[in-house]
Length: 107
Image (tube, rainbow, N blue to C red; front, side):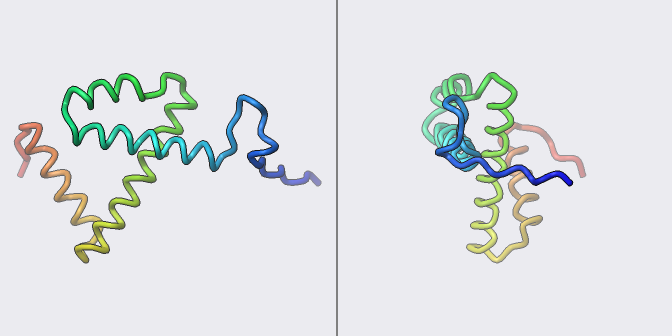
């Protein structure tokens, strides 16, 4: 019988490797930085997308996970504030995004 692998703590992580909790926290901070840059200006958003987006596959995967977690948290906050179902909120956000891009909506 094989023993389950033990979880790595921050103190046990190898020098170049962050603990899983630290990795997720860093990914969420990166996602927040990119999302808030968009609020400032298109130029800052373009710079942030280029400068902050990881180039390696592990970093990009962590970044995408951070974006997902932030999106879920924001969706939950919108649901609590409005009482609207999450699906309705997402649909409204998708329609707004398409209008901003100038894409006509299919009926």
